[in-house]
Image (cartoon, rainbow, N blue to C red):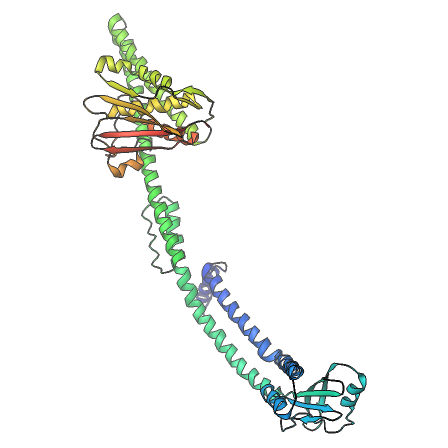
Length: 471
């Protein structure tokens, strides 16, 4: 292998991220396989003798319990117990001798002077466990001696078969099994980790594109795993919303720039006209100066609306809660539009109960009502009617402002509260206001925790908000 190939391999190994999802899943699967194999090694090889001895001891204990619970003992009963438990039993007494001695490798108790038997009888104990070497078969034997009655004793024993050859066979078999399982774990683990990580890596790469402002990112994971599909769907939704936000941001910048540029252009143009042309003509000069003042007022209104919206959205809008006569407040707002009634025949129809007292921020609620009425004026029908209604129920007041225009498309209703939003996506300069009014209304009502909404048909739109009654 030449130097160039070695360097290429080094680069490939460096590019492998040891903390990547694919590597981690692969390692976890291998680790799990190793853990299972170790567990099997311990219980099938290392602890096999201990488990076998424990099992036989438990069988002796169960046989002893059955003997104690037997009403009458005979050869048939003890043979049945011995057969089921694979053990040998001898019942010994002054006038009793029952035995199941067979070719099971059990220790024989035929000699009355057998040391263990005699020691237990003389000890006056109720029960005792012994472990001895059966000289006949040269294997380990477990003995459980117990006293059944005054002069009746039971000696239960079980031979422990040599397990060395069995363990050796199992060990050799397990070595082959372990190697096979590890190889399979490496291969299967690789494909499983690849299947799980591939769609996530793809989603991650597409998310980076989205972070860089590329809204063409494709989050189709092509996975049948529920969580990955949910992640892909969530990112698709986020992409769509970010795309809308970016579009609205561009519209906002364009619209604010337009609304700032227009009055500034007008102010400059008329100021230059006064300076160069009409400074000697009093009537014309006054007319030009009035236009400059109006455009300045419009510019001030726009700046104030932007500041109010910014304060509301950053939660810096402090509320001054006070007792308010809502009917009086709305009448004050209507008076501000009185000039439209006089000059352009606008009609404001206000229906309300006899008395409506609430607790809220007067200045902000005034701003909400003003903006909603102003919006209705701009979009009402040819009859130039605006309806303001206060409906009272047991728990709240519902304030609604209705116009008689052509209405809003259903797909546009959820965006109508956005800054400068228009269904035709073209900026329309309102007769009164800045285009930020509904967005300001939304933020003020949210800060007050008031419910609000809009309904629309081809006969007009109704903007409403709810004020809870004081308890």
